[in-house]
Amino acid sequence: QSVLTQPPSVSAAPGQKVTISCSGSSSNIGKNYVSWYQQVPGTAPKLLIYENGKRPSGIPDRFSGSKSGTSATLGITGLQTGDEADYYCGTWDSSLSAWVFGGGTKVTVL
Amino acid sequence: EVQLVASGGGLVKPGGSLRLSCAASGFTFRTYSLNWVRQAPGKGLEWVSSISSTGSYIYYADSLKGRFTISRDNAKNSLYLQMNSLRAEDTAVYYCARDPGDGSGMDVWGQGTTVTVSS
Image (cartoon, rainbow over all chains, first blue to last red; front, side, top):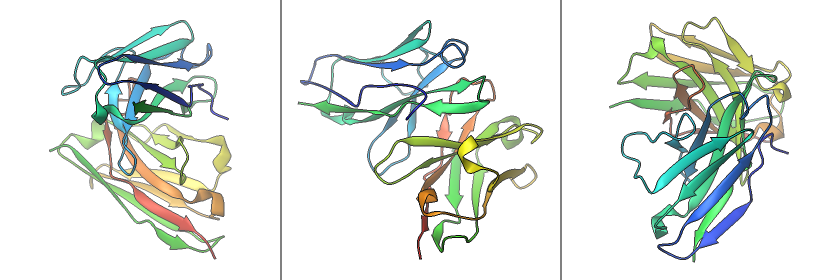
């Protein structure tokens, strides 16, 4: 049972948009930055979004992040087959003094 | 090139010990916090432990119950994880990951090292 809640899977056709939600609480998302990670099976996670909505160098602007209250959202527009991966949200939990992650969301391009 | 390379994984019997290492290069190691994050087969990411840039602040996942110890050697640009009293449920790929220490995100990840606990 993850501290952060994500939908297990989302899917859409190429070129379409998907959004992934991440729900937490006042001690984690409500108080700290949210980051998002992309993981292609068999490889290490890669930082996609940091500080709620900023993109590291090299991450296309098709990927966006936002936060409101105790929830965060990752958006992917112009969906490509290369976007098929697992996506995780993460943040620091000030009550647990621990990093917490969502259970992960599998994105499928139909 | 900024890089983290994890090593030290392997097959160990239940109750045994293992020490993981993570070698850093391409950045000023002593200015970053570091983390261990693991992923059991077919499961999601699970944070294991964090250590601040100077080693003054250390945090562990409650589930570890004092069996793991994180440490770092800033002179050697290296991070370590000493794992004792290993259990089958510790079987996972262990990743080391860097973060600026302000909770902004883990921006560099190692390739992972596999730990298998089995008799």
